[in-house]
Amino acid sequence: MKNNTLNLLLIFVFVLGFLGFNSLYVVTEGNKGIVTRFGKVVRDSEAHLNIVNPGLHFKMPFVDRVKSLDVRIQTISSSADRFVTSEKKDVIIDSYVKWQISDPATYYLTTAGGNKTQAEELLRRRINNSLRSQIGRLTIHEIVSGRNNHNDDASVEDNDFDSVDVAVASQSKRDEVMQNALKDIGASAKSLGIKIVDVRIKQINLPPEVSNSIYQRMRAERDAVAKLHRSQGRKEAEAIKAHADREVVVKIAEAERQARTLRGEGDAEATRIYATAYKQNPKLFEFLRSMDAYKNAMTSGKDTLVLDPNSEFFKYFNDINGALK
Image (cartoon, rainbow, N blue to C red; front, side, top):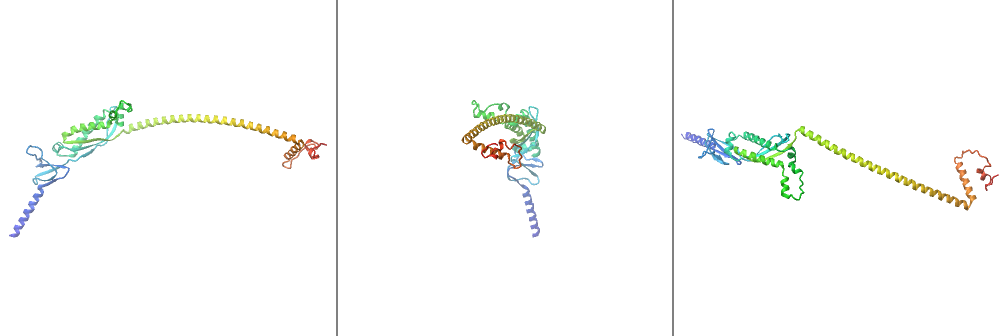
């Protein structure tokens, strides 16, 4: 009898614990909970959806279900897509959006029970439409450079501009596009119970066919500049070469003139020395001149001279005084 009572007590405790366990649920931090009963959302006394805050809560076991909604800031990274500018030219833009659930009840009802995939798909469409509208009013130059066309020719050094005017003139068109898109999407996202925190353009590219044509044009422009510099360099090189050649001719002529002058002065000095030496001892001078002539005529030792022995050339051979026979 006691064993039966104990078994019943254990079964009762087990059932009570099981029911208690299924009657409790926890909503973690950063989430909101929505309770459904028999597939329908539980509402409060004013027919509003009952939003459950983070913490430990009770529910009817086996009947109630809890849908947890992440209310933290989340990111949607859109794939790169083509947009058409005001010039009817294509650009490829990659963007992302930061969003957050602001009204869990509205979000739950408009996204088929808090379906995150459906919510992100709706946001992507609206983001794409807003950016397409913004990009369609700009030129490629404005999108890439980030400034207005009329600001490119303006001088920020003008004394009529103060620092505030310059800052306004320098406002980035990309920032303007992102701010306008943030306003547009933010207004429409409220109907989904979503708050748009930020809209950012990550990257702006041109299609491959447009990029290739731009690269070819840039290459042609750089080639033209290079050819201009090379032609100017050749012109300056020719001028420098002509100047150097002229300087060489002038210096060579001057050197030759000085050389002729020095040779003339040397010859005159040699003649003067010879004349002075001859006046001092004409016989000795004549004798030495004859000895030099003998030496120069008979350097190899095998020379043959066909001369009259009584000629003047051999006068010192016959007589040391140079008397001819």
